[in-house]
Image (tube, rainbow, N blue to C red; front, side, top):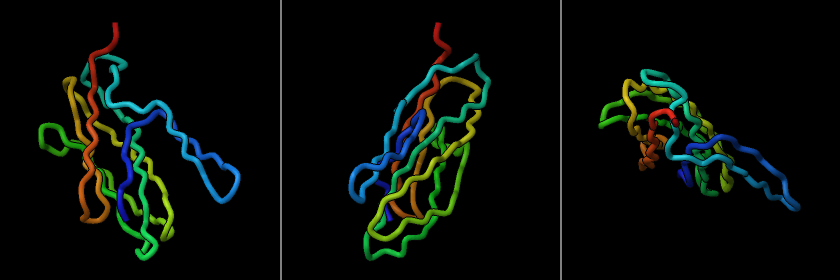
Length: 128
């Protein structure tokens, strides 16, 4: 299996279209956000990981997402992953991250011990 995309989002919706096809509508794709209050706080952005399973693969594995700040792990999520061979699927990952200061974290995503896809996310000071 392989990761096709990994993005922080506000919402996801599956939509059927004519024929044997499905659409995935992602809204509110983001790489940063203003904090709702001053730090310290716990922030839990939603990460959507879209995966593909080749037709000749087993279709099972484990999705691991490690959130890092300055190279140190600040949160981790591991969940089973099942994708029908030849098809696509997605997982939502909600990592609860403690912020003592504003700044950037990176979500390091991988399936089993495969290649890592890194997605940055920056928490900004409150607006106004």
